[in-house]
Length: 257
Image 1 (cartoon, helix red, strand yellow):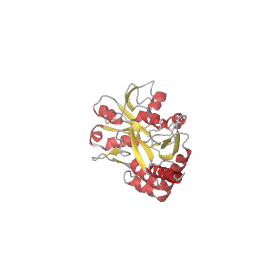
Image 2 (cartoon, rainbow, N blue to C red):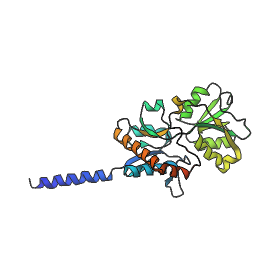
Image 3 (spheres, rainbow, N blue to C red):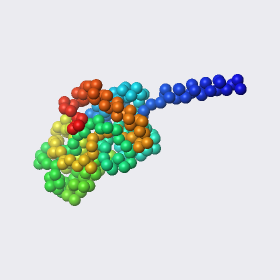
Image 4 (cartoon, rainbow, N blue to C red):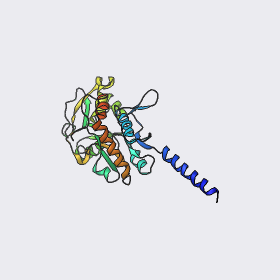
């Protein structure tokens, strides 16, 4: 009987220790996606999305960590609780929302085609007729291709955009189709400046291209969703969002309100 208070106290201490050590785990694609996320020479993650993650975690007063996975493994890994939130430039779409939930958006940019400099600009089905388009697997651009381009152009899929960029520069494909900011980063690189140019933004289709990039969550994690939404809003109203953005972009990437 004399041991009971000690055991209860020990259990309470253990529980408080576990609570103190709890962290929010952010799932990030394990390939560079500049300027949003990439590893530096020391192997540390950096980029706009990482800076925003740190600001959001500071607002939530939470310890946060990064879990790396392949792009097409992010949603299955979230569902199997290998981490808590997808934070990897994932657009909120109607199809994905059937499976997982999303935070409020934290940026929104158009989808774009890039191609060789001597290619005629344009991003309509007629412009890409009988061409080959490089697209990363399991992306909104892949879904867009199926609806608008599949009848007129061939698709070549890649695990990473870097692989698609290499084939475009080598002349093995005619276009790369992806998010405008990721493609713009390639166009500004030495290799991109030498070979390629922007062909144009595709016509918007919110059912496919979504309502903006958001954090992906398990549907039952309503408390974490509320905390993340409050933190995203606080980072924006404090001016910290704009300060982070100015480090990487010379324009507003949040998109229409």
